[in-house]
Image (tube, rainbow, N blue to C red; front, top):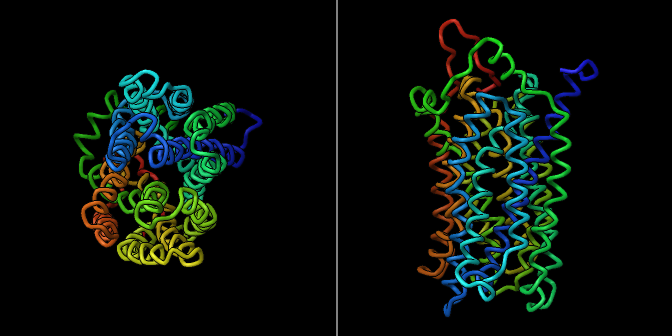
Length: 436
């Protein structure tokens, strides 16, 4: 650590750097989700049946999540071997290049099947980079923070998901207001191209952050695994599996609200393309306020308690959400998003502090990244496509709400069995936060 950099300053730098990385990650993901819901079908997946084109487009959204475990294994290895900081610099640049490239792609009418192939390649690169990004980002923050404040500081990083969603929606709002011909011709590219600005800012901010204290201590003590993935699969399989299931509630609810709702507006409610955006955007303010509030609460009452109660709430809140959306009136629809986002905020706020403690420092990057990305495949990746299929087969929202509630119930059960890692004999205990 440099002489001019105090622990308090490093905590601030770590939070800002991790927040920017998470913001960029979710901006890129939300931008792709928005385009996959409303734009990419005619541009990259033309079909005589619009529903088929939309389903193919949403499936390409899922591919990015499928690629994330590759990034989790690769970058988790380097994060636990070389360090958090260097690894996060690489994932940030890789993610930015992939997103920027999407804005330059030719369409199906221009190059035929090469267009969707290139789009999917970019989506895969996005997925690989993000697979190593999120776990490292929250570790940089949580491992720099004091034990008694890890719930709060970890939750601050998670507000980046909302900031990214908000920025992506704001970037696409003027695009959707243009005539359809202009939107499909050139305007859709702009939100992807401007992501380069975020990446440049994030790069310089991350350069100023010191290495994680927990990793530095583990490296100094010689407690660095040669093959972290082997050690995780040998000793921490149970934690990885439980973590993957525990993240389902937050993942499914956020993806359904931020991605599928935009397709559900015109297809399920008969609303215009921008109608749901106008409800979603102000509702995201709830997340920005509630996530750090629940993070601070968790430091007082226990991260595990907040996680379990919020997961239980997400079993029933999807039914209220869809019922309020069904009114097709702005006020009730906004209320629907608000109540769903409150439950989501409480659950997601404690993910960094709660999940970090289930792995020892030497395996934490790999274990968290693999568990988290596996959970995203099970939850986020296919949620929009599953919901679109359920709507097409049943004609209503009840089955979709049942699917969301079921995912939350699985998370609740997994959370019951998810506990902090035990330190090996002769080793210091891993980080702990109030769990009660």
